[in-house]
Length: 219
Image 1 (cartoon, rainbow, N blue to C red):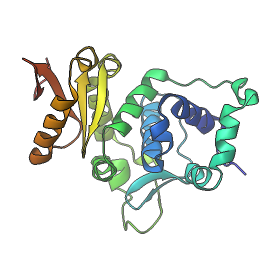
Image 2 (spheres, one colour):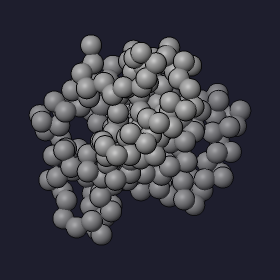
Image 3 (cartoon, rainbow, N blue to C red):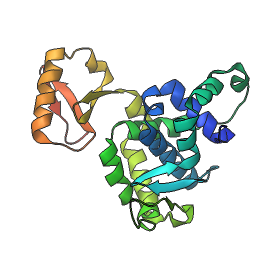
Image 4 (cartoon, rainbow, N blue to C red):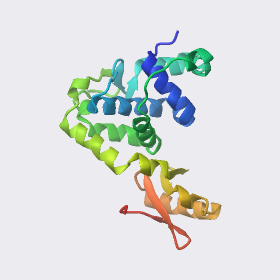
């Protein structure tokens, strides 16, 4: 039996349709939902933090975990059904695009580390082996500032014009209009450079004079 409510089902449908790799990654899917609900909260929209816990240092919606682990076949069947297509729920697409982008460009380990920038997480952390319920009331001004900074630094217009290339442990951001100009050899060479530098994600780069270069400051 599926546990997801209509809101989470439509968010699952958006991810399943637009970002299938996130749908198949339980940690990243839950991180997407966590971010989406945080932005919904600070933008005075409807939000849903029910069943949200901190487990093994990840934000996890337990109803989502249940359906992905035990009812995934039934969930996919529902999302693909004509009956579900006739239901409607307003998804903020720009918000979803930003949250999916952030969930995509961080490794699972980086997600673990990143969430501890939020007081909504830090205030509840006790032991990584416990399932600790997250309370939306713990969201504070510093959390709002961080969320706003992420939204400002990665505007939807930037995301739409960016190609994400997964190279080893790095997620590389390449301007979409230049991606076709890059050869496979250049990508392999750049991957070797990244491996030696051990950079945090995401890594922005550009094509200059026929070579991929790391962008340290965006224009």
